[in-house]
Length: 480
Image (spheres, rainbow, N blue to C red):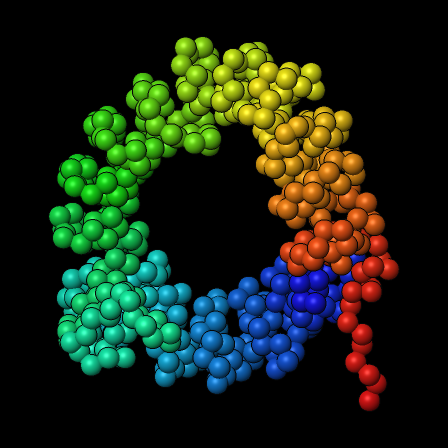
């Protein structure tokens, strides 16, 4: 029954007080206030409101003493807690709660917790972007900080210990390879990784890790945007393709390094480089010919000038024309030329462009068939009649049915056709143009078999009849 109640909770016709089981969902949607919640009866909903800064201070004090550690841990991540509550959480006996405080704390509290004896708390402070930069530098160097005394490994096992990758214990939450020989090495490594990824960590504190033997630390460094050019050049010579790919997508690298990386053998490196906002167009067009870049609009294409767009649209290479066809602000004359392109990949890219006529969209389907059907179905100007025809296409195209099921112009007839495809049915169930009787059938599985996800979407459909909605609610408790 819960899946139906969650759906009903999203249906604005239903009074919120009738679906208590969905209180957390409603709280995060802004449909509940503190006046609607009893924290003793619904601690999860009360914590959801505190997480949004909408709870009451006395609730925070209540949960700070809650015997359920998950409640205290959730509270520790909430913003704007009273100072006495923060202090109580810092003194918590469960290290997970203290670490959660360190992860979200204000600068002064984060600086205090950076000196905590437990590595997990220091690691959380290292990941907190509010931690002061000098403290982050100290977490890397260790200077001025007391030694770490405990870590997640030696909390559970007597050192020396290395956690086996095939550990058979179901209750074990240590990562494969986690180890402690008394120096808390794996926990300290995690701390360093968090600090290197933190943009607040000073550049001078991190550049010494360019040649570190740890791949994870080098990758963390390669993603930073504040390194000197010589550091990026050294990272671009790394033997690991993952490091090179991280460097390739980094907006901080210059044109010289971009051109050097464009010759790399790794497909991932070239693909990431294609998404670089400052890649020269000649390098990008060369990459497009031999790299599977995907269908997203690339930043350099989005920033191209009118003259560059015109030149790219006239390229003899369909891979290049496909790149420019992803723009949704093309001049009509360029858009219309690309809409008649002989290459289906180009037509697929331009098909979602607004402003195309029904005749142009039909012509795309006539020329290229199933290869462009789904993209035509995403066009915002696709007419109801065209959408109905797309659902009747033989052979059927499941992806096109999913797009039709989402379309604002989809008719009842088109949506009924979508119910025959599993994934499209899930989308069609929430479409307001779906006939009321079809919605009611989906709630019970009539004609399609029971599907809890579909039923939930149907319950949220604004066209759900009131009578069907009220019939789904559980009966009120008997009067006492």
